[in-house]
Length: 216
Image (cartoon, rainbow, N blue to C red; front, side, top):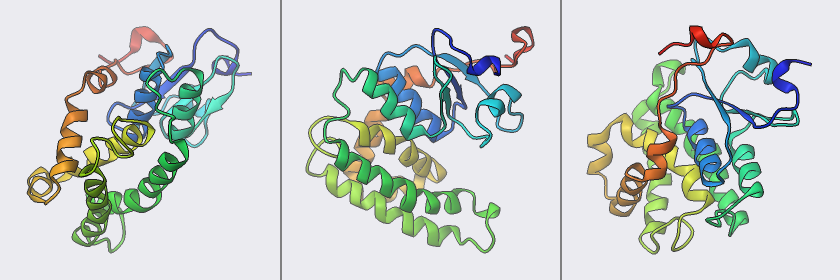
């Protein structure tokens, strides 16, 4: 068995700072106060230890203390919150998961083809931006009624969706800020300015199997 998969005291998190999937996982781990060994990677130079744990080669990957591996960001969020959920993020979990599913399967493909249009054959970024905007408009309508997506306080849906709205907004900030989404913009800015977001965006040195060779 690879050393990374053997029993250990705390989970290992393979992460990349700017990846929205990794952000949502780190947010839940931070909220649940679960200490992890954070291993920051470069997507262009993935460590063999991570690939041994998860052949899919994307972040986040969480190697559990018993050697189990969680390869999907939402699975990591749910696992962490099931251990400890002091802020009650899992309240209304069914409704939250339905909204997250719409984000991941309907909004995110359009976001990718808008932000990274050159990676896709015949992708029209304006067309995909328009399609992605429909999801944000729906969030704005929700947020016109409550401060958070599913009620008065932030929960699982807010923290799982927020990193992707951040990515969408940062693709063309002037365009995003010109849209008629005052509630969604306010919600986004609140999360961007939060202490929790600042904590999970702390810069870590790039991890290698030889700590003395870690990039700084």
